[in-house]
Image 1 (cartoon, rainbow, N blue to C red):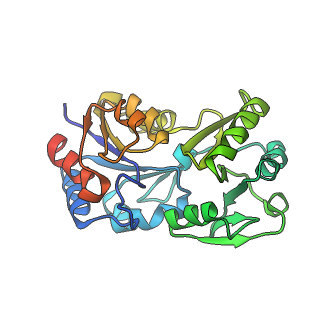
Image 2: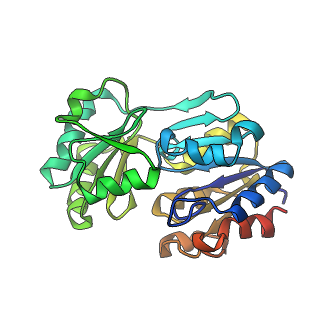
Image 3: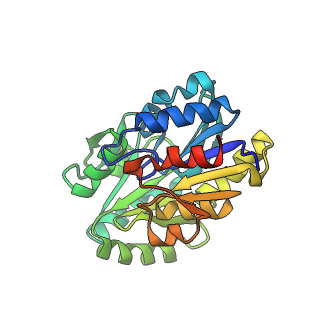
Length: 268
């Protein structure tokens, strides 16, 4: 099978623990592009947290796609055109913003500069900022500063507290919103139907590429749907056990250029 689209998760997959893309991975991705493969960066990150990686890979020059917020916002890199953008209805914002406080966790979302949150000292809020290499703007009241439609909220905190939060939100927004863990300490809230597999399906339709021509690499819990959907699924050596169980092949870790290994083995 000749693959036409390569979907790459970022954190724990394409980037190492320092949030860098290795030269080995960059070289392999360029070879894949030269072989006619389209690149899509598929991440739970906001757009601002993905642009630097897209620039490093020169996707504006060579072509490629950003699938941000697990697919809530899909952008064509060359033109900057938004292909898909789905947002959470405004009437849900109050309850979402209050959920973090109710369970001793922290609610955050994003603007064009980075994260906006009421607590900028939480280690979990700071971890999300570090993951994306973006700034945190502290606000007194998160709900009051939101002026535009939001693609994704996150509630972050101690995993035990977030379990309670998860069940509460699931019940509150049943059949209205997507609520899922990307990490045990990161609870994500997106529009109903927004997750990597569904978003990739829409992108494939837009590009007239068959599902069987998609190869995907991931490591996280939010990559499971993508790996199950892809024509060929690759899990990183550092992936969660549940993620590895969905893969057709397991490569080296993100620290040892697992993405480059996958490209060399299955694309080149």
